Length: 479
Image 1 (tube, one colour):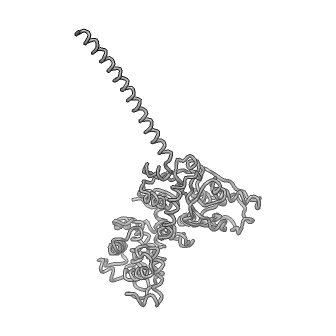
Image 2: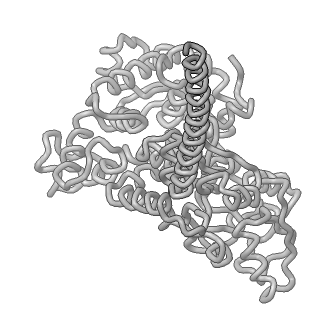
């Protein structure tokens, strides 16, 4: 009886084990199937995600550009800077992601990256042309420039149109300038031109200066910057006006990021932020004076070395090159300079201001520079805390010229007219109104030659840019 029971129990256990192992296999199969379904669902979701969602998920916006003074560069503090960089960073901030710049030295490399979806779009000061529109989509224009035929002054008679152009023209390969010359060949078969992928647009302007080529084509905002340090770059004539600059996107049917970029640029247009950004980078360089620029560069070699250590010593939190630029605007670095109104010295201080700053001899270079630096610092500190850089510095410079009282009057007028009194670009437009009775009669400090601080600030910004470039090229005395 016991043996029979044991046999039955054994068979029962074996049966139970078989069922348990079968259940295990079934469970494993279900787990595998469930995992496969989850994996498939994840893959399906990733396939369904649009470009904007993928960017938000990875937390990075990849933007392709080319290094240069108008697009992207590292400033003297090795910080990323440039018009295209700042504009793209604004979009990245709006999306809540980090901006990563993908820099290439040839435009065709950027097109390849865009085609391969390794970058999200191209922001490189591209103008919209028909050949490009056949392959890519462009946002509405955020800036417009002229394109100029450039040569070195004194090397030839200035050509007035394409029929008078004689000599070698070189442009960047794959650029719109190359597209234009290809079209012009039919009408002007005498033109001699080449394109090169070995040099960028900035280097080609250097080649014109070095006379290794006769002509190149340059965008006006790029040329304006370059002429601050190479004033012999001359304009023959305008070859295209205007050229609309825009961002380029792949034409792949995914409108998510493209639509976000259009909305972003549109809002920047409406708010005036885009105009402010353009002015910050290019507004002060559009006016060019050949004689003044030549004289300034010569003075950096012959006069500045006598005072450069004093500018460095007393600049404090300011860039010494800004302090030097102010001094050149004020006195052309002449310590004995004197105006009809009685201001004197390198920093052209009034007698009451000098006394407040403990400057007892205004024609003494050290006392003048120390006093001027301290006066600028006080003006900078007295401005409203909400003002941001670089506008805060431009306002301080304007106050150095016209006084805080008149500057505040112009800010009040700006606010009355519905513009932002904390942005230099808006106040700059209203400062000249202080000459007009209908405006200054309703201000606290009355009449002022308000156009003078506008020119004053723009000149200093140009001198400062030139000093920065000369310093970076090692053409100024070292510490």
